[in-house]
Image (tube, rainbow, N blue to C red; front, top):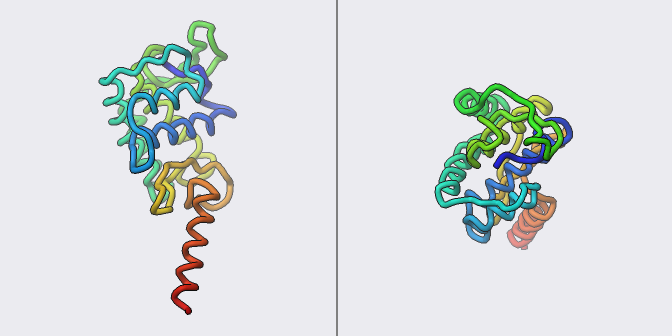
Length: 188
């Protein structure tokens, strides 16, 4: 069940984005999908080998892991995000180890129990590791939730500038236009 993609190096952003995309489907809101099919679609998008089997119990455990990661994405500052990541890493990860999944992928780092760890353990530990590396690189929270009231989608902060407020340029533009129109309507 463990990912074929490496966790460190150039793929830190990839793994962190996978965490955000899984959060988006595991913590559904109006207009966003929920359930096993949506989770499998995200896992497939990020290169999980077929067949991808996610049981009802796996889905429930993934949801619980997403609730824990939600607190990291919701952290207002780097110190709070670091505290939340440290608590998750301390309670759930195993010593780092390199694996190739029996030669089916390139060498990469894992901090879950083994190459056949349950989905939730793999998701939580690999996500925490990637988010911790991003926090250390940027000295800022590794992610957030879109500030647009009509969206709220999780996103990853990867740039060197100030932390993002919106998941995409489209959400940011939509909110700026709405504010501008509200101001214009109030002045007329």
